[in-house]
Length: 349
Ligand code: TXA
Ligand code: MG
Image (tube, rainbow, N blue to C red):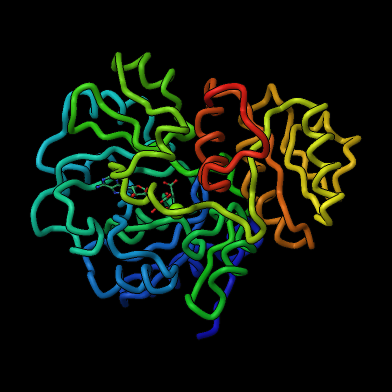
């Protein structure tokens, strides 16, 4: 299959490009498109054959359910049994935006493979012009996981999608670099207090301001949990090819580690805040300023992918604090590292 990549910007006939994408989706094909978080690989969520093509293209285990994307708030009632009060408040405050709400699914409306046998469904309205225009033209719900091969870092650029899925999908809509850079926050509102199953751009602090107490496991707990509530969280994720090790943000410790590793014959890539630029690592990927967590999140996956373009044999990733979006960054780093530390951490994050 030939994969076509079409740029959606003001220099092109957008109408024609969207029609092409809508036609493909209506024919039961998959299409990759940008959202404000990461690129998604979409299929019509009521068409089981189409949804199966997503799992196939990604190489994704079929017990990992997909998020359903909608273009208007009104559609929610088509897919869920009831909308809890707290969910209404969150939708009003954060939609469109990077927040996925897990609610009780209506029976037999969505394709079986969307919910992977669960009685719940995750819904979100993305805050991206291309995604919203596509959804509103299609007038159908779109099931869409991140548009990467399973296990790889999620794509924040159309080129990342192409790298992973060329020859496996017919169309990529290129809307440039995604803004947030890590996946949406997933919150289960079927329980009280609600539980954050995956931290993301909408932080615990932001949510608690609206609806009071919510529960968020620490990155370590999320990593260790043996029967995770979000089935996807049990797999190694977001990982480049070379092994990733977490290391505390301490210059002396980091330089010592680099020394040791180089002596063992390693080529070392270092992922760290910009102020580490004088490092002795073979490759340095500055992922923003330590104080600017949004910037770190936006660059994280591009940096992890960039490590794969080098001959680095080991990747050291410095940790950050879990305030605000830091919780989501640490969650993704723990996953990428499979929980491995270089040396013994002095803290429990
Ligand atoms: O930002 C995002 O959420 C992106 C863009 C494309 O919207 N999508 C995304 O989808 O990250 P995916 O499939 O890569 O991650 C969905 C996560 C998985 O961890 C999955 O297990 C969880 O949400 N999930 C989906 N439906 C669920 C459900 N009914 N109950 C519990 N967890 C669910
Ligand atoms: Mg994913």
